[in-house]
Amino acid sequence: MKSNKQKTILLADDDVNLRRVLEFQLTEAGYKVLTAQDGAEALDVFREDDFDCVITDLRMPKMSGLELLEKIKAEGAEIPVIVITAFGEVETAVTAMKAGAFDYINKPFNRDEILLTLERAVNFSETNRENRQLRELVNKEFRIDNIIGDSGAMRAVLNVVGRVSRSDATVLITGESGTGKELVAKGIHFCGKRRDKPFIPVNCAAIPEGLIEAELFGFKRGSFTGANLDTKGKFESADGGTLFLDEISQMPLPLQPKLLRVLQEQEIVRIGESTPRKIDVRIIAATNQNLEKMVEQGTFREDLYFRLAVVPVSIPPLRTRREDIPLLIDHFFRRAKEKHGFESLKMTREVINILSNYLFPGNVRELENLIERIVVLSDGESLTLLDVPEYISKPLQIFGRVKFELPAENISLDEVEREIIRYALEMHNGNQSQTARYLGITRSALIYRMQKSGLTPTEY
Image (cartoon, rainbow, N blue to C red; front, side, top):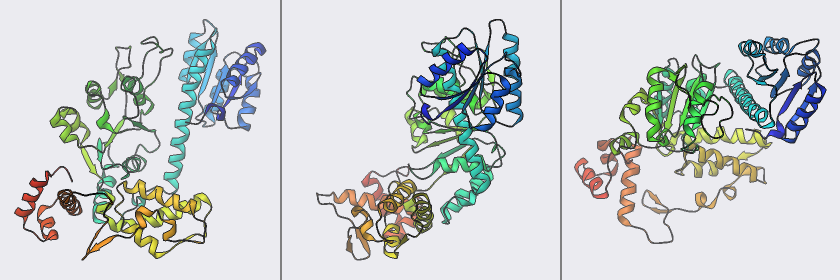
């Protein structure tokens, strides 16, 4: 989210003293504030600028706050509107909420109350803006077949993604960090029937364990210290659309039954409430961990795992689909040049070759970041090996047809053998017969060496 200094608020109130006090408080909090003394003036101002939120009194001359709200909504604006009501105007406030108001505040109110309500509103506005931009991107250029990859492995992934995007099935996306799990999740959402509804991403690993329940399910005012307002959670914000639960393996074990209930019943209960609220949300989850192993270890619920993995999508690491690397290099190079104004920059064949031979342990994300870095730091008309980081471009030791990058310190021969076997298995998607033929040994010899190295079928 952008800082408050970048948020623009329209404040409409015919009470000059209240308007000045609110304008001062909001400006002091870092917001840019434009004011109007009645509804008609507010509508004119609204049409002249871009706003993140509108705060309006309900009772004003020339045009009431309710009429202003209706005009704003009639013009198709998704800007949240907060209405200010006098004591005893609860029915009018309810009417405003039904007409599309984000929230209402009763007079008299304090500074903290208005700032908390406004913070929720601008967060809502930012989410709407991001989703609108994503929808525009989708309509303009995003299609499933624009996810870069022509290898057999990626074609298989895209085939599943294309079919599942037409349904509402729950999807579990697995793959190493940097393989593009969120991109695939967005592809499923924005190529499906929910494309015009919210896509709400949640990184389960980034939210403190004590806050994740409130973040997901929302809470009732007064339910705990600091709960000053009734607050929606991510599930309600995603209503009608998709909730993307990234790093689902980090979901606290005590919270997993509640997530399971949402999947089963399509309803949530806010903290501090007892009445369930119906929702219509598609769940897409992602992880770079082995959830089956976590189930065996008792750190992830088996019933939740099966509920999430209705349609499993496994994204292969970049090193197992090396034929896709030149396509990705070209895509990211063109995008980085356009982004940073290096349209005439070229890339030599030797750079393409050296990058194509690198393993990229950080997968597609590492490749994308690397391309952008060398473009930004370039100072010539063409990228050469001098522009490539030394850990990629330095010479490799060659023994026969096999290339090794030997470290300066000591290495373990057993560890080298283990890594060779692991990479060979990855190259052949775990097929032991194909891997054995590739290594020039029998399948039984491969199994023996796997056992000797402590490799199990789930570790490659």
